[in-house]
Image (cartoon, rainbow, N blue to C red; front, side, top):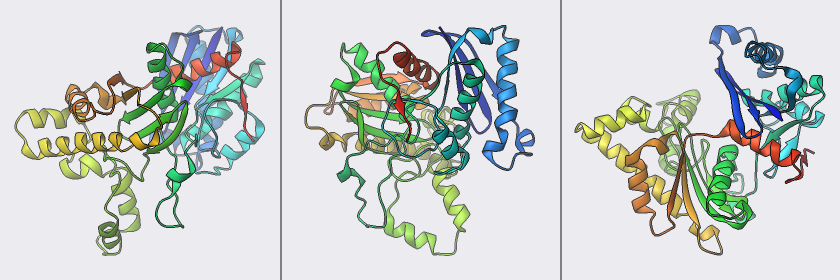
Amino acid sequence: MKLLIINPGGTSTKIAVYNDEEEVFKKSIPHTAEELKPFPHVFDEYEYRKKLILDAVEEAGIDLKEIGCVAGRGGLMRPVVGGTYRVNEKMVDDLRNAVEGEHASNLGAPLAKGIGDSLGVPSFVVDPVSVDEMMPKARIAGIKDLERPSWFHALNHKAVARFTAEKLGKRYEDCNFIVAHLGSGISIVAHDHGKMVDGSGGRTNGPFSPERSGGLPTYPLIELCYSGKYTHEEMVSKVSSVGGMYDYLGTKDMQEIEDRMNGGDEKAALIMQAFTYFTAREIASYVPAFSGPVDRVIMTGGIAHSQYVVDEVSRMTASVAPMEVVAGEFEMKALALGSLRVLRGEEEAREYV
């Protein structure tokens, strides 16, 4: 069976075609700011992106009649448990109305359904960003007006956890993992028998990343916010896009930072040491989330390609569990595999309500 996979992002739409588990075509369609300018809202880009997807598949010589399923990246919908979901009208309505905020990934499900319906085949999303399986005690933030959120890289998290469980000869649902997704954004999550029961990530907590601040000291942060030194918008940017390593070193390029460290740059060395330290400390902090031993610490994402980071974090977390490195991101493959599990009857499709 051929599956069409769609992953819309802010500056591109990634598409792929899988023949069962094998990727037979992939393409990243870029979108310039000028091209997206006519569309005031994300959902306004629907027809524009849909045409580009269909044109690209046709140009690749792939017969759309051979497509048996369409899967899209799940966007900012209401909180759900992990799994593969059939795209229904309620899901599309929530994404159209941006009930949890606007993001390019909100187009994943509508595009999958629109193309799937036209072909007469099912459409799915798999482990969307809004997966929320946190245990109640992990939500308590210390002020009743606030709650610790569940915004993790769920699709990639669960994919690499499944890969690792299979390598161990086990089911994901029978394992305890701490998964560290290290990229421009970072999320570190405790996976307890197939559920993401606690974790950090997004723009709220956890270690700093190449561009995000991670968790910050609360009282000094309050003082800085009210100091008049920065506007509200500037503080949001410091937390989400120009904080972290960029704020200290003026670059988000991890390879450049590592090269500077190896070349004797003491400031770059200190920031890299701090990054690996806080990453390892965050990983170790999730040991209490489990009632039994941790099977593996799993490192994934682009930064997992760095041997320095792998070696340092592995050394500091050796007492937690052995390290399994699954470098890179596997979102497209995860969408295909999640859909195949349902189509083969290995997993029940969930309904979004």
